[in-house]
Each structure stands twice: as structure tokens, then as C-alpha cells.
Image (cartoon, rainbow, N blue to C red; front, side):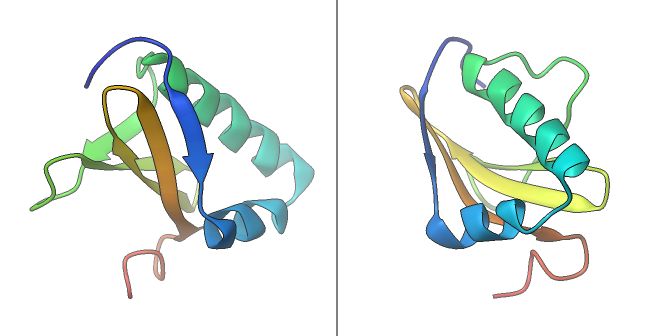
Length: 88
């Protein structure tokens, strides 16, 4: 993954899910995404999604954040609990 500051975008659906979570968990997610935006993935549970060249999964507790990394942008396109986030 490319290091350096990126523009951040989040889908409406992912944002609504994150806002529905308890404040402490929202804060952990915010900190983790903030580190990912700067390219600092050290200590984060991030895995590349199979079959997708630029898509990754960030795990924060039971919550999974699916995102795409480009040179100048980090796009969070889906967020949800472990059992449901990967289903269409």
C-alpha cells in the first residue's frame, strides 16, 4: 500500500452504520481510519481482499471496514459486522 496523506471518502451507507455504533467503538474506528489515511498500517488488522487488486478489510473488534486504496484517495465503501459485511 502507498504511504502518504490521502483524500478520504465514505459511502453514505458505511457512514450511517458507523454512526449507529457506541461512542467508544466509533472512536476506535475513527482512529484506525485516520491512521490508514496517512498510510500508517502498523498495528492495524488489515488484509487484502482476495480477487480485488486495491480492496482491503480493516478489522476493529467485530466490525469490518471495507475500503479501496488509490494513490490519492481512500474510499470506505462498506462497514458492518463480521457476518454480514461481505454479503451483497
